[in-house]
Length: 421
Picture 1 (spheres, rainbow, N blue to C red):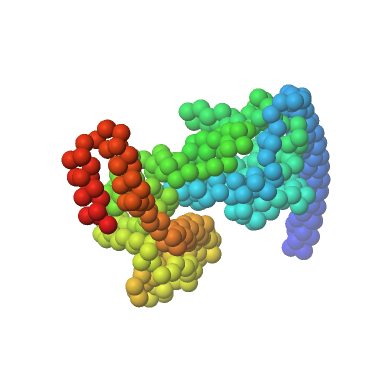
Picture 2 (cartoon, rainbow, N blue to C red):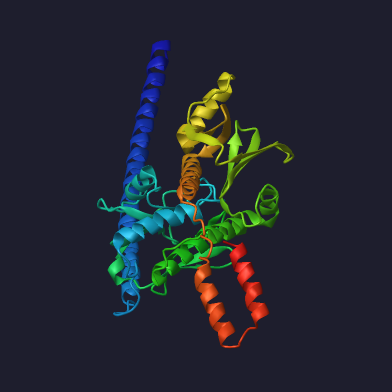
């Protein structure tokens, strides 16, 4: 066999091998495509089946809750006027929920402080349409899940226990709800609606305090008790921050009956921990180093403070720190509180905007109360009117003539009266 024949033979075998490999590849591709299409079909079928299962579960859950509604029983929002309830909700959050509970670790937010972006995520991811309803209460459960309470319904969204990639979601009309209670256990709380378990939320951070606050809120609604006094605020803050920190703050009280109205911790350029406390007399600012040692304590009596305001621009001279501070401000709605006293300015770094706003509101309220008290006219009690001397002499003469007093007693009383004229 010549060289050319061997070359042709080799080329022929190579062509046959390439053809065989091509056929094999096409066969493998066809099988892989068929397998992928089968997997896709199986996934679509699973998704459809799970969506139907989750929808049925959600519908049955809502049905079981509304079935327990008792006509003539307690109403979800109580008997109060809507405007009064809205005002109480705002006051309750500002006075009893916000103090001592940092917004970044709390799961409870109330109107008008509910973040619009959080509501958009709640509606978009999982598809719970609030239909433009105003949220009054938001209980967060991790990322994107939770419970939104509006005037007309409770919207819920949580991950399906069987497959967490699916959402259990829906809306329960408040007109079909008698009771809403957070049943608190050691590690979690069951959300009970009309006595039926809606979902379970694990306890972390300040969640336990938030759940207790929410239960008390609905107790107040049921009793139509919309009054929050200073002692109640003081006691609630003390329970949140603990007796140890409360004792540290109380050292700076100037009156025995002074009440703590607000407490908030701040972050000073990511390196030191500050806290600010408001009483009914003063603003207390404590700056602590990272290890907890007290570095500086400043007290500002409200009568000496000329103004308070929030500032959101970083004043750090270090470029990197300034960039970080600005990013934190944008991401977490942080700000600094500027206090003007006797021509000087003090800055408290860094508070959440809701915290700083509440401190400023307390300051204005206390100043307003002080001005009202100062404007009250001083009531001077007039001396009791003295009986007319002549009239007394006539009565004494009648007593002498009747023999009730002697001539000497009459003369002594007469001399005494004449000396006072």
